[in-house]
Image 1 (cartoon, rainbow, N blue to C red):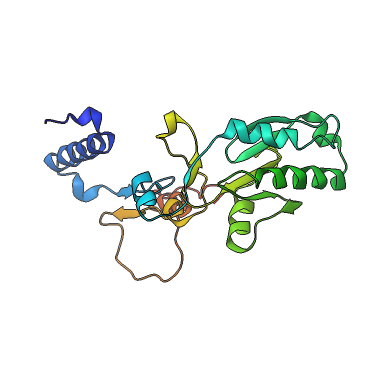
Image 2: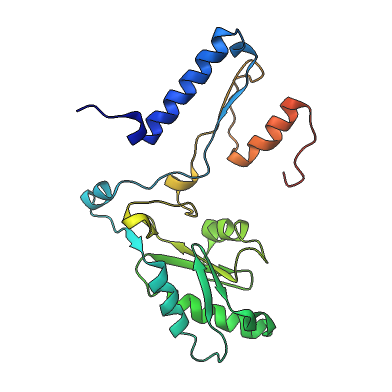
Amino acid sequence: MKIGLKSLPSLKIDSDIAALFAWLDERYLLDDTAVVFTATHGVPPRKTDVARANLPGGAVDGERLAQGVGQALGDFPGIRVEKYVFPFLSFNDAFSSLSTDQRVSVVRAAGAAALEFPGVQAFYDPEASSALGEAYRRMSNGFYAGRSGDMMLSYAPFYVEYYGGGSGTSSGSGHSYDTDVPLLLLGSWFRTVENDQIVDAASLAPTLARLLGTAMPSGA
């Protein structure tokens, strides 16, 4: 059976990259080109591999989850779930008018309800969290007040948000299969060194800024 490149996006990308390198090489530009590869997130193991290893895993129905959390807020008149877009859950405007103690109570009640759903591992907001250790650090780094909703949820390993008929994947996981991504720098400007420090994709922008002789990004 002949498989067209259009049906396999990763092969199509490989083909495009090869064509670009060939174009540069034909014009004797390849030695003067800096090439960088990285990714925003990884991909969890295939469902069949997870099932074969007898590991828990699956897709979380975000709509049902939001409804369940909303039903758990009956003790807080006027407070309801406005939307849930993994990993951020937002309440209606009345939430922002509550005192700090009241907001903490709402978040804890919502978080406790969320933890009842299979696949939900932790909840977080700056004032109340069930996450500990590295999970807490990663969730706090991923939370930006005013843009991140009112709280965020984390799923257990091998659980993803349900969409695309259950065949899709998404970013937002704090697990190694999702957070460990390639960062490859190729070209005459870079030299090979051994580095025992943690390096992440956020290092890319300041590295390229230095290479180009431009100012560092303000958020770097």
